[in-house]
Length: 218
Image 1: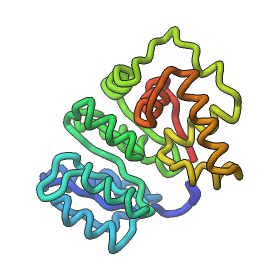
Image 2 (image 1 turned 180 degrees about the vertical axis):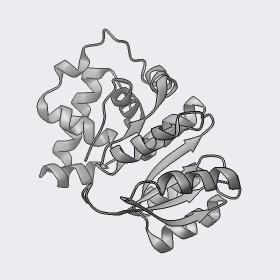
Image 3 (image 1 turned 120 degrees about the horizontal axis):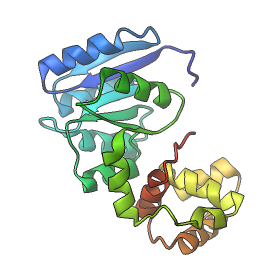
Image 4 (image 1 turned 90 degrees about the horizontal axis):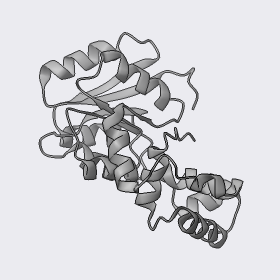
């Protein structure tokens, strides 16, 4: 997929005025086509499964299914839709879960409208976009990261590549296929990354990568 195509979008929010505002905002950009709108998570999930939009902009807190519930299903079923969350607030643990599951963007509702469009511009290029110091601070706390930590400099080029792909949400099998390596070799590289950075899980590694301000791209 390239940035020159027309990108289909599904929108979901349980507040009608917010949903209308989102539709009007995104419709100002000719590269985006609104494919579906929904007022709850269950309807959003049905639209995503049936119509497979390129992008889905979802409120996190919706009736019937939350945005996180929808994201879990999208990732579990390997649907092609890139999910962006729009939220008034998000607790640290839910924010980290969203990042670890593979959310492409988090935009706060009190941000300027242009922030959502900027986010979508990054997402269509395959990049993750997390707005605001709140997100970065939450991820930094979870990863126990400090500015003077120089761990990444110790990684080999291959280890750095494996770290980036893990933080992008890929499994060891997918990484092996992407890098033309055996799955066992990927596990060795990942073990070395954990050891060098004093981390113990994929969740912590994802948080570490984002806390360093990494913009992960495919």
